[in-house]
Length: 305
Image (cartoon, rainbow, N blue to C red; front, top):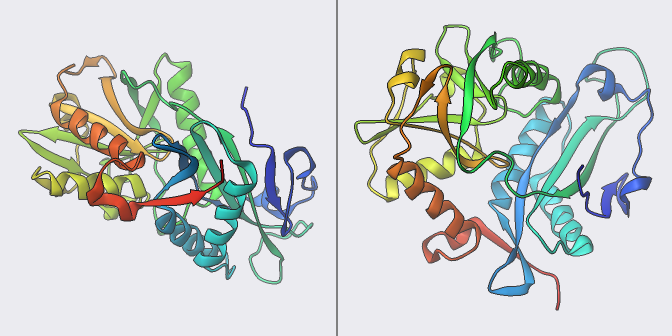
């Protein structure tokens, strides 16, 4: 059961969540012609009259780019200003997640992106840990990650998430928490909604963009933090067998944050995760605005006393 924030942004105005409804004939509902973002926010632990948003600018830039793939001109600064006002309207008292969504809003049956209206809405919900912070079990999915040549993977296109849904359900119904998808070349791509990292011999390794991954903002944050901490970083293809013998494996994403992997298929992984824990602790400090070196990653929204 989700606890949704009471106010949404819908059809260019702020309205109660229960009033923000679309028609069953909405174009995007039938063809997956939408794109979404997702960002976290927390009340400032040091100042309850402030809300902290993690990497707001990057999230708005990525959603604007996703909108362009749908032939929708939605500037990042427009998205940002609406999100800020959305937070002020809701004033969440606990950790929360914001879901902005762009979509083809016309009513009709022809699959297309031309001559069709587009729109933009935002809602939110309270959200703590999306995955267990103690670690998750993963299976290698029988479903393959799509290729950028058939679907624009640089955007969070809603229709692409049928593969993630199939993989997640397959994993859960076969006794695992999460799925890891391989790409068409048989290399590790990503999880159902997270990027994948491994640690081997002190190196942090993750698939590069050419492996048909999403350009994750948390992924980018992890790479930056690791370099700043002096951890060697390598972006390259990863084989299935490397997952099974890695010193540490973790997933990253806005909802998942940094989540360790404790088991892949029948292979138990080490419970000693020094690099994962170091990165996770640093990310927590940054999102709570306790790390002065990363203050530019945190947008402070004043919401009053």
